[in-house]
View 1 (cartoon, rainbow, N blue to C red):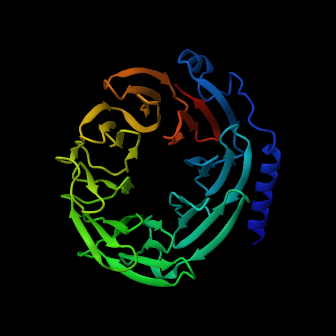
View 2: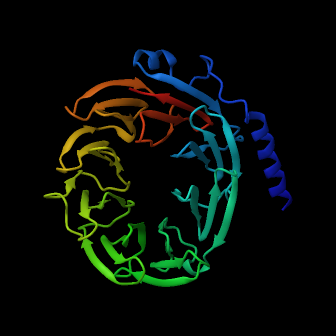
View 3: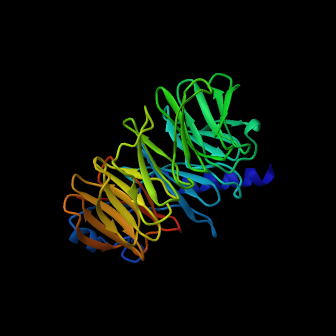
Length: 368
């Protein structure tokens, strides 16, 4: 308790040092991306700030929800910034530093994290942890299956079960499992269904309020990547090197054939307006037409997509380059030196880049 109190006090001191001051313009010695290159590309430098990370602490994850940019460090400290001006909102330690923290879902204006079998709910308006609840029934799971609707919270457990808990009181309503009892690696919901992907390669749809299977689709490989569900479609990558697009109502393939990536798929897709962005590892990043399932372009050294405009996609590539791809012609238009950028947030709703290095420098840049 004494250590926790000292750590919390340190966080308060760090926050007091930066809160309210906003984000300063960087000097030439500390800029994350060259302002000269930004101006040459016709972009706009918005802000840069330096997070008060401790020695040995590094930026691990970045995410954007509504008005805020969230930065999670490898010691499980969460920073919240106003994404318009970079001003610090709050700093919160989510858990002890050695526990794995799954990427959150955003619902009801709150962030819902799973840390082992504990749900941690962060209220960004109050800048506090609104709730902690431990679900002992799911065991000490290492999977990140978390989804919810108005009635239930769905969690994947270390017992290879999908557990459905009532939102009112968190009592367990029902459980489900894959036919082969494989671990459940991803969970998603629609208004009518709950869907889960099993590591052995099956995607299962159930009625949202009972353990009643609606349909099942079997890929030809195992599944490690999380599913993405939008507009009645399910996108799931398999370690058979194929990306599948399924109709969430029927489980039937929405493409003539799955997209073959030439590499086992371990990461989820990012959905743009009309393009599916698929990170693959050694094959880079693909831009795929959502309707046809055909490749528009490939960035062979790509790591991930950051944002898009009406016709362009912005892809961070090895060994530290931002490639600008034309989503109409499939050509690379130009590239910008991003050698100091190690982390980024994905923001597809507006043409803005949120980037960082591991040491806590964070910047926002508007592209065009």
